[in-house]
Length: 246
Picture (cartoon, rainbow, N blue to C red):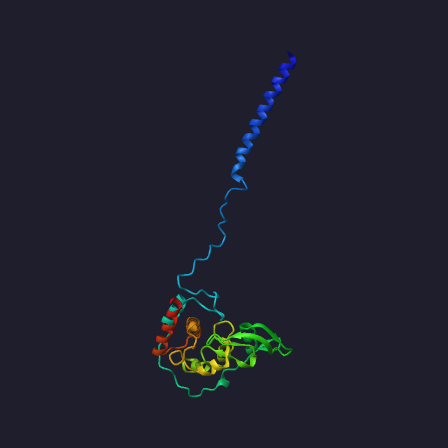
């Protein structure tokens, strides 16, 4: 009889212990590692999707630095002052110091060649000795660096007649060696020399698929440096930006 009492007591104690464990496990469910946990309030928001038909900065296909989407470019273009082209009196390329030294024996030309090419090999003087470049303006593929020019998207002479005539030497040097904005691009010598110092209403890249990039780049540079545009130039830039959503 005493043994039955002891067994019954043990069963009762075990039941109480199991109940306690069950309650403890129930209370721990709020911290279930498999549950969905809200992100901390300090987490950065997800980037908004690009507008339909827009080309985002640094997006696929952009080969120039500092590019903006077409909507931003349209806003920039609307903000540019429209004025007749200024005089070329006093102009000289020598007043726009280039190419500037960029360190490691490299000047601006060699930096752009390395940036815009593939498999570029330099010699001990930082000169490109081999590589492959695709010229944005005409689609030409070049493997000889000597056949590549570094184009000022907004030419130095065009900058002069749209506001740079009033700048000091430091401002003109910065404009001529700008590696941050979409001002410098390695292109075929043939395309660059065909363009000369002409604005978009007078010269357009022969490869029409480049018009979206060219129009955005030109507009951004003019906006960055507060340069003016002519009516005809603005009209053609609008046409080029329209190709971004075609």
